[in-house]
Amino acid sequence: MKRKIITVVTGLVGIILMMSFTIQQEHFHSGIYGVLGSILLVGAYVSAHYEAWREHDRRVRHVTITLAVLCVLLVALNLVEQFI
Image (cartoon, rainbow, N blue to C red; front, side):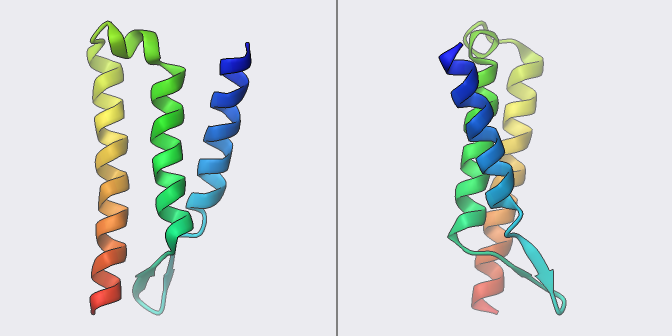
């Protein structure tokens, strides 16, 4: 029960922190909060489906990899925006 509560809180904090990602004047913008939110969201998903992850469930692994790739894409867009 305690693990479920921690997972839900982590997911909610991740979503709230990811809301810092914005598009302003045709530029993608975020700070460290968006990156932390992305990491927390992926971590919460893995925590919620840990047993299926350990059993090598294809669907859970596919969704986890897709979430991780989307989060990496957000971070990459943020880095590109900072250097342009």
